[in-house]
View 1: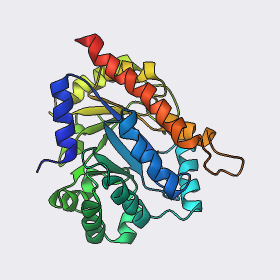
View 2: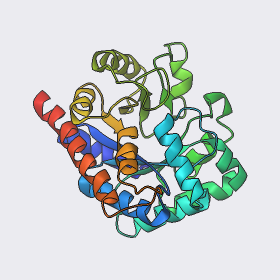
View 3: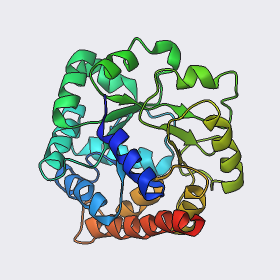
View 4: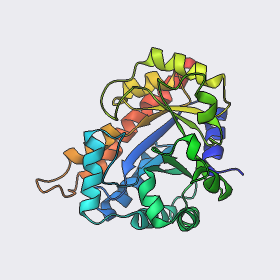
Length: 278
């Protein structure tokens, strides 16, 4: 099984550069604007898109992404509509890998088999489900792999060498290393500490390792891209979106461009990293 994710990372490896992975919340600030934002991301330099599934009770998300989820839920965004958004994106883009990121509850309610079939047919490439540990692989991970979707796992600063093999079992696509102990957007990532962690994880796997949480600027994205196979940015993009909204929290003429312009600046940072290293 070769997915768009596998293909994209193979291409980037040949080019000698790290991936720039972007995260936005599906349906934020409304479904139509959200689709325009997702369409704009690859043109602005995003190599892989993570699309958040709106959920009422997130555990790992900081205030910015929690607020984005609530904005999306307020305008009626659902998991079904999230898959419709993916389908809309795929009409014009059949190459950019797209990963759904969220929590198990909406998928459980939707029905695992139905969800996996609909996700695959809509053009989803992988899943990051924050609250399903390896001990629950039979619940969603194994069925997802059988359906042809990558199942991407999180490793954290507290994932020691004893725990790491369990985390990496059945993981595919890439490994998402959480650079800080805490929620999204809470602190800045330390590039040196990240470099040591990435080297340690690479002793256990040949999968690409992308690093997220705590990357907000082109300089930070570049510093992380020097140490890892990819930099992931979410909170900064969500904040750019939020800051473009009107007083009632609705999209304005600036909203799509606000996200696209920051994406382009961050992408330049990521691309500069590997050029400097060559």
